[in-house]
Length: 222
Image 1 (cartoon, rainbow, N blue to C red):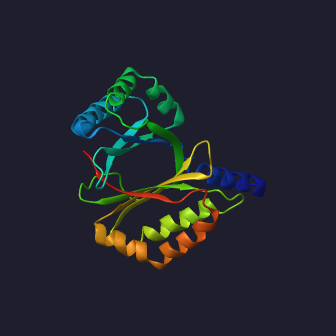
Image 2 (cartoon, helix red, strand yellow; image 1 turned 90 degrees about the vertical axis):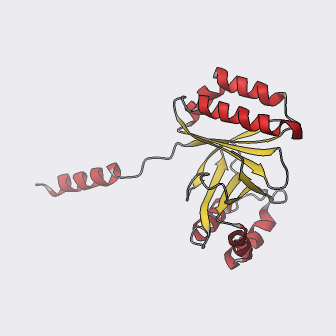
Image 3 (cartoon, rainbow, N blue to C red; image 1 turned 180 degrees about the vertical axis):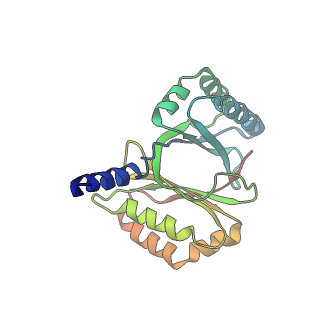
């Protein structure tokens, strides 16, 4: 067999074995509802999730409630791709959900599109876990923010008590990130906060942030 043809076959096999691009798309939303409407908002979300589960490209929906602040929710939707999310946004059950939540809300429904930067761990399955959702806004130009966040995620996943450490990057503004952490308990989170790599990350992040780090603790709401 000619050498050139052998090289062609090897190259084709290597290229064919490459991991396909991650097209997963996310919608991360924040909403505050009236205290008296908290239970109704959770019930409406469950209906919304059940109806959305029939949409093409649906992966999962997660509802988190901020610790110590009832009615302050974060909603993370995961879709196969951007097209699936856009089709879902126009669906009647999505409009119905937004109509219901509009009657309960105290703040705007702040929803933003994201793509995958680094994933590791499992979605919300442990009701007792402690979750941290952070918004990272990078103000400096030409920084290594994505590399910095990847490094933090990869190292943090090796810690005792870590269940999940995901980093999402804004689909339109590459200097904005959402970090989703899950820890077995508060003790594990406290140990992570005191770890050398976490302190080093914060020291490196401080000079390039465009706003103070927005880091909040959550629990699974449903």
